[in-house]
Image (cartoon, rainbow, N blue to C red; front, side):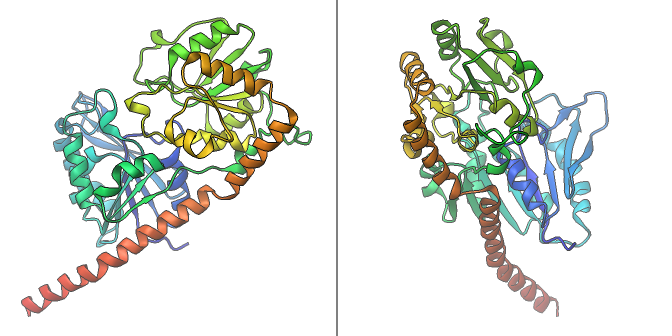
Length: 396
C-alpha cells in the first residue's frame, strides 16, 4: 500500500494514556500516512539518551525519549538531549524526504521542529494550556511562536476556537467526534448478545448507578461528588479512569463511591451499559473554561441520560439534551430528574442525540482535517519550488 507524506507528532500526552482525540485522529490518518508519535521524555538519569520505539498499530511508531534530565515534559533543560536525538528520527523518515508534516499538541516542543525540516506545521490545540495550574512560564511565548509558524491550526471545541481565531489566518474548529458504533454497544434494550457484557468489578453493584469515565484530575469537582454520595447513599457513583495531577488522598471516600482505575477504550462500553446516568461533574474553573469533552458524544451514543455542570461546550449546544446543574444542589437535582425521566422525555432526548450523532463521525472529522493539511502543503510547495529554482539558477 502506498502511503502519503509522513506525519511527525509532538505530544504532551502518551499514546497508551486515555484513548482520546489524538489517538482517534492519528489511528485513522495512519491508513494513509506513516505516523511518528513523539512523547514527552521519560527520565533515565543513569542511562544513555536514546529513543524507545514501539508500534501500537500498523503505521504508527511511538518514540519515547529516554533522557538523563529529570525536568518534566519538553522543559528547556530537556531540549539539548532531545535535539541530539532528532537526527536519528529524521533519518527514520526516509533519506531525502522533504514532505514530512510536523503536528504539534504542545507548543513546548516547538524548538524541535526545525530538525525535522517539515514541509508544513500543524497545531491541533486541545486546551488553553496557559490556564492549567503549574503551566511553565515559557508556554505563552512558545504558543505565540507556534501560531506564527503554523500553516494550519485546529481547535478541539467552539469556545477554544473563539479564543484563538483572531491569532491565526488559517484556523478551523473541529470538535472531537465519536465512534457511534463502538459506544452504541452500550445502548439499552438491545437484542440479546449485542449489548456489552457486565464487567466483573461492577456486576454486583446495586442500581441506580451514575458513572463517569476519563482522567480524574483538577478539572473534576470532587466536592460535588462527595455531596452526591452523601445526599443519596443508595446511588452508586462509578468513576473509571486514571488519577493525574492530584493526590490520590484528595479523592473523597464513601461506601457508594467506586474508583475502578484506568480501563482500555475497548472496555468502556461494557461499563456504560451498566449505568443509569452518565456524569460530567466538572468544576467551573480556569482549567475547564475551554474544554470540550469527547465523552459527551460517547455518552449520547450509549443513549443514556447525561448530567453535566454548565461548561460552555456542553451547555451551549446540548442544553436540550443534557441535564444541567450549577453547584452541588442543582447538580443533584438534575441527577434526580435524569433518573426519574418519563418515557416521553427519554424518547425526545434520545431522538435529539441521534440527530447530533448523524452529523459527525471520527472518519469524517479526520478526512476534513487531512484535507486542510493537504491544502496547506499545496500552498507551501510552489514557494519551495520557487526557492529551489532560484538557488539552481544562481549556481549555474
